[in-house]
Image (cartoon, rainbow, N blue to C red; front, side):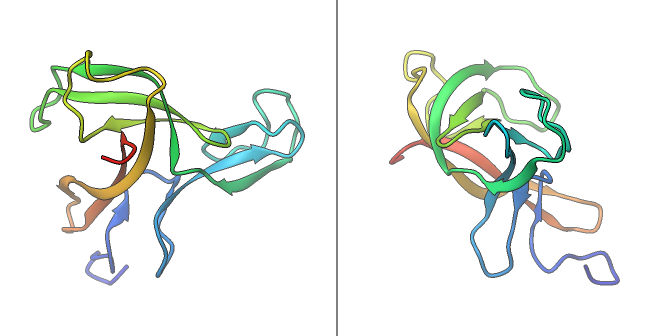
Length: 144
């Protein structure tokens, strides 16, 4: 980051969104070397099997299936509603919460188990006090 607080590029909205220099963004999980369970967020102990010091960083898949969703009609000021809040089971492991975009917020059009993909884009125009923009991840129906 420069002295004036301005970053060279957009900032990730969460620590598990990785922005490699010159590479494509990706979500990072941590996989247990003992049981293979994948979690979001760094940890030293597996919450499933209790193994200690067997966790290692892993790149998460960019495709998955919609596990559940909620259509949000009331939110904080400045947040456009309605929007679809979703939980997605990613291929090869990991469960992530995010917003489902590029689909009408109508329960008749959203199906449990539908295939979705992760997309990375500007975080709805949000900026920090230094004017840095953010990049976020969203889910959309595959092929949308």
